[in-house]
Image (cartoon, rainbow, N blue to C red):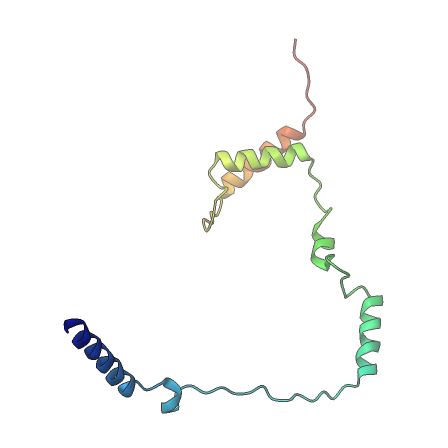
Length: 128
């Protein structure tokens, strides 16, 4: 008997809550603007000609190759040993962050990193 009364009370409470609940769109708050049709003033042939010309000028990348990668790659004059030495010095100074940590080095720290790279570039001389 108790379970039956409890079930009836739950059903009644749900019905009352549903009656008073008003969705956001019913009050005019939520709207959806359907995408508008955009008409181009340029013909398909004009777009194809422009794409061919841009490709000839090297403005369009092919595949995964990009203009940024071509500009930035291969420009370093540092050897692998120099880069490793500079990274080790930056780590020693606590400048290599992890995650969201962004550390701005001081001029003295930058100079210390640069000197570490120069030391790594010096030829090794065997001592007796």
